[in-house]
Image 1 (spheres, rainbow, N blue to C red):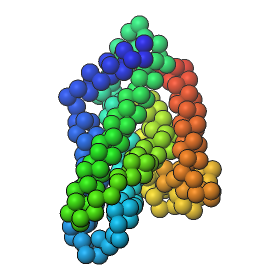
Image 2: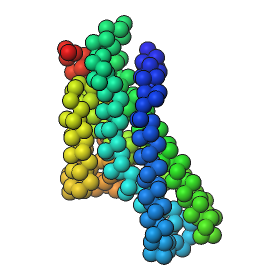
Image 3: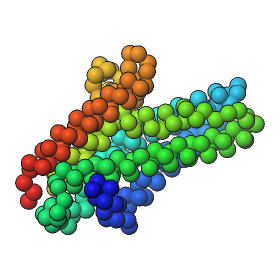
Image 4: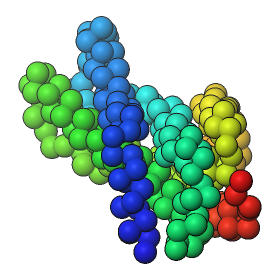
Length: 243
């Protein structure tokens, strides 16, 4: 059932601008990193070997990808839920022989899937840029696949509570300015104050910071709380009267 609902949701956004956003996010992140290298090549390029080059490159891409992820998840959630709001089609959607919890789950899965696609593209674009940069510098060491995947997917998994929250707000609120504002404020708080919070505060998790210096702790906490927020949002949506 969920796969059929997800397929229907994908059909709704077949010709929507959300796909452009999915592509533009990772492309813009890697493009900005490439521009930084081009403008300050002598300053930024001091690698003794391929491993150092990849470490510096992935660190720079990660610092740019984090704000893109946090604001992107709010925009993507709003755009996927906004279809029904714009057409006042929620009653029509819920009149179909589909359970409300499946409708909510479909919206969440669609948002999560689109962001996952962005993360895949981020990994691919980063790989291409890294190989190109290494070739231009004469560095031909092995590609740190593990580090590449960590930079692309760990923040995404750690941000799962915010993905669930934004999907919840975007589905239940007709005025999309509210969830977008929540997303923007969350991004600002996470970027500028996240490192000062205790480890249990979710705004710290997407940056993969904790006292144990183990990113998997942030990832695990994000996935667990994301599931809780998703379930709470789903139950609230099921009980809510749609106008």
